[in-house]
Image (cartoon, rainbow, N blue to C red; front, side, top):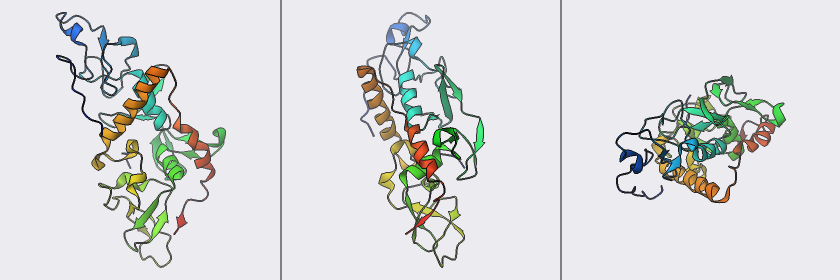
Length: 248
């Protein structure tokens, strides 16, 4: 199973593409770039020391480049493992460098091999993937396609909904008494509760997600702060691992 922004478009300065080498570099007749602009925060003339090359997209020479501040915000908002804005592959920032999050571990909730599985409770709790950590944190309610009753599910089944109103393509056990379907499809009761950074691509909220990252990145540049780590929610989520399903 695989995981899953609406800001006004800001026109680039004349002769400069968003996320590309600056106009001063282009005018030098192909000289090595001395700066770049970030495709997320749109800040131009950034020093190359602030550029982070992702293992998947935004590589050196690409027309799309990302700054360390924006990628740091992406990772912090998703429990330490970021999702590439271009191709949705997972990455980590370690020692100022981005690496592919390919180290897979089994999540104690969904029982799937996933990147970014962390232990809660200060390292002593059950291992949870970022998706299940989110599901436990939000305590989302879903409607069963078979019996149409509601159930709280720890794993974010909305990730497998093509649209906010469609039922999921994947299944989860229904614990409502009398439901004829043991494993059924689900849809979230309140789609508006889902943060835009976690919505599937088909929901059309990618621009909203990147706009939020852009706002926080620009605030950090102005105030010199650090991204708030959403991974802090891992501990309380892990503590609730024993209460997987609540029926309503």
